[in-house]
Image 1 (cartoon, rainbow, N blue to C red):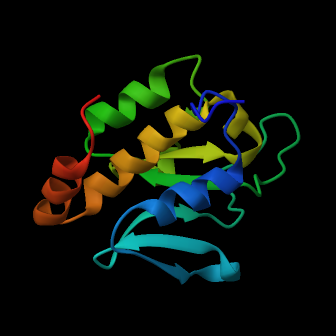
Image 2: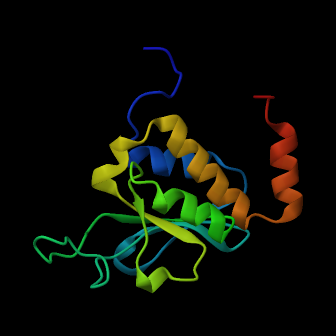
Length: 141
């Protein structure tokens, strides 16, 4: 298979893609869940099961929620309002520039789509100088 990134994304890809961004550090939150940061600002983290994210049929807490920062409320709404999108939000995240994704649904994205979300999350939290340098260094699309 060619390395075109068109295959289904995996949770492992979140880790790999986040770590591939410049100036990234990893801290470990509650339950030793990884929190990816740039310049001390979180841009992706793996969330503990919480009462605000539950299976509507069973009431069981989701154990696989990943939080991605977004640049704006418009970006958030574009991701969560698309019926085909696996991204969601809940009342706990009202007004917070982030979207949620269950690890069990990550395969609904291609690796390329996931890479774009990870890069956008990083860009939303990186300093203007770091973001500009990274964007300048990218090959033209």
